[in-house]
Image: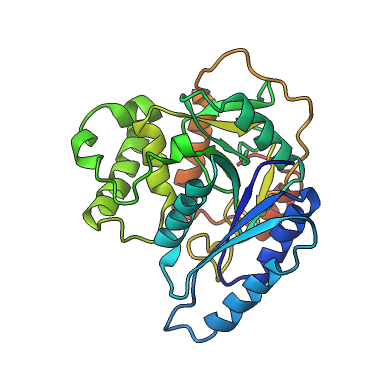
Length: 310
C-alpha cells in the first residue's frame, strides 16, 4: 500500500476506532487526519473530540501522520472541504474516509489500482467504495461508470479536486443550461439538485454539507464516477448522533461490505450505466420520504440484502 489515506474525524471516538482499525491493517505510509473542533453550545464536545483524536495516537507502524486539527468548530460543510483541499495541497492523489465509513480491506487495493489506471483520464473524477444497488443491477465487470458521486469512502486526484468550490460561484452561469439533464437524465433529479445548489449558492457555501458541491463539480466537468460491483463500505453512522443520517431504518444504513475479487476485471468501455444510477436515485427519493418499514423486515433485509426487494 503506497497511497496516502485521509481520515476525517470529529467527536465519535467509537466509530473512529473502527475505521482506524481497518486503516491500520493496510498500514499506509502517510495518514492525513482532518479534525473539527468542539461546538461552543455543546459542552460534551470537547471531551469527545479529544477522545476521537486520541485514537490517532495509536499508529504503531512506520507512518507519517500529518494532522490538520481545528480549535474551533467549522461545521460539517467547511471542515471537510477545507481539510480535503489541504490534503491536495500536499499530494497528487489520496483515499478519503470519514469516521463512520468502515471499509472492507480490499477497498484500499481497489482504489489504489484504479487511481493509477485513470490517473491521467480526465473523464474520471473519482473512485467510490459504495455499491448500494442491493442486487437490483448485476454488474458484469468489477466496477461501472456512474454519474452520481458518493463520498462514503472514496478516492480522487488533485487534478479533479482543483475544480471544487464550496460556494458554487459557477452555478448561476450554467443553472439554466442542459448540463444537469445531460448528467442525470431524470427531470425529478434535476429539480432535486437545482434546489440544493440554489441554497448553497445563495448562502455563499455556508451550509452544513460539502459533498453536494462535489456532485456539482463532477457534473460541471462532465465527469464519471467509478463504483464497485460489490459494496466495499459499511456506513455505521446512522442514528440520533449523526449530523444528517439520523434514521437507523434508512435502507442505506449498516449495509455489510464484501470482498472485491482480484484481479480487477475492467470494463472494455467508458459508458454511463444509466440503469444503475436510476436505481440509486429512486432509493434517494424513498429515503427522503422516510418510508417506515417493520423492524423485522429491516433486520432480514440487512442480513440477506442481495435477495430481498427494496
